[in-house]
Image (cartoon, rainbow, N blue to C red):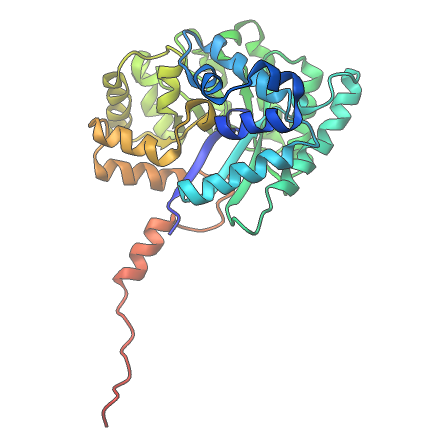
Length: 347
């Protein structure tokens, strides 16, 4: 039975190294020549980076090949792996649609083409062969101008059948000069009934309390318990959930030890702040969601009870999960029911 909900996974960072490398070999002569052998490519693609900025540059490599034509190729393989190897029942896949448009077009033409991208992704995610409930989260981006980001919010409003929320991405350490603009943007989204999450409080330089009231979930948010634990009670009162992506913080140089993550989880549990465990970029990390759970468990960051709490929390905070309960609770309720009495074969 599928047990997992994934709330924070990027379309660009979801492509596992082998799938990406094979795409290069089949369809991209330039990148095939750059990466002729698999093992060196995997080492390059998955190695830890010193900073978040250096880490995020890897997204541009994948974005360059995730065109409207190629997106179904990647999404099919992503969902196949998520269903077969991760037991996902629910997946929210986030990305910036503008970065999948044709960069030879004008800005206005690319804005128009974003609609095609959302439709292509939406249709590609409706795969009956691997029945995962899927939704898109559209990422506005700190490197994009207001007009493009505002158009992304409009897309989320216009495509509720495909899009469940918006996000802000691009490195929270770069929000400072545009924080008022982001507050306005997310305020408009909330006024239209659009659900929101956002990369925030991930890095020491990405702590912007002005944006917190506009987020229903917080992408990462680890600096809140580490630096500003006084905010945790407010988060709990507002039912805001942290999307914790453990492997990311060691790939980006943000954290140095699992002891820091133990502090994050303990403070959140103690103050009633909900936490969902996510992968962020399963392909870049070469780590799937069940291993994120297993790694936290075997290193005593979580116990089994806390692990199941996080699993159930992910379903409760999923923006488009249609059921009243997580699968684990549904299964428990079935097991507690009295089994039907078998008819006797004797007179």
